[in-house]
Length: 283
Image (cartoon, rainbow, N blue to C red; front, side, top):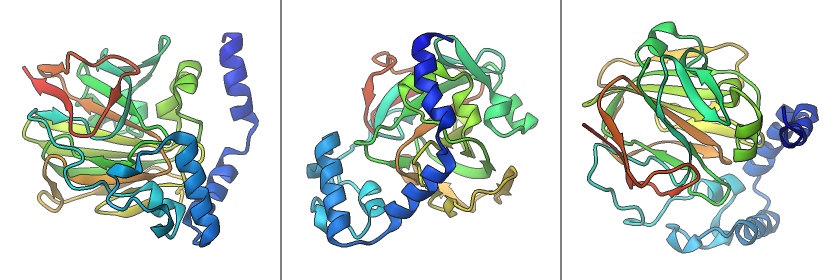
């Protein structure tokens, strides 16, 4: 480990990450009137949040920080491109490309297995061997709802307990297997293009993750891997439809099976992306 990586990781190893996250979640849920409004205004100023595109641009109208953080966008703020797969979030590209057998690239030569990412489900992991992946990072200023990159039907959701390291780019470079270490929610869909996995990865200060069909998944933070299977046709989504949200920001990882897939030629690591842009097409 380099000195830079050591200095990045040492505070995270020492800090009580779960306690900090639970305290942050409690604070984000609180409805404290003027104190809440003041915190929201300071956050907007610090991170340069563009409230002009919010459906409700008035900071004082949000009863809690969570309400502000998961704010809706104005109608038409994110037009959907014509593509087989569109970007599901606002954020930045961490990494993308082929899965090498079962290994997903993270950063600086680090990787992790699809088996570990999906919580030990060998059958699910096998469907994505030698497929493709994309990892997208949502910064504090970004819109934090997650939308479907293509039409699909929900098959399964898996809660995977884990740690709560930061998922910022510096940590991704320093900590091998980061996205398979942190707690996460794994969602598998059937789509017109075949099966597809979308993983919501938790992080330090991420108070909770939620899906539109289940509501808040964590808390409670179950100590064991927990699986929900859904009958075919129970939860059907259109391309661009909201499927979940982060209550404080994090990362999305997507897996595709082995098939002809061509990512947007303009994509590159660290490039900013917006919901609805072209992500990939079948070839």
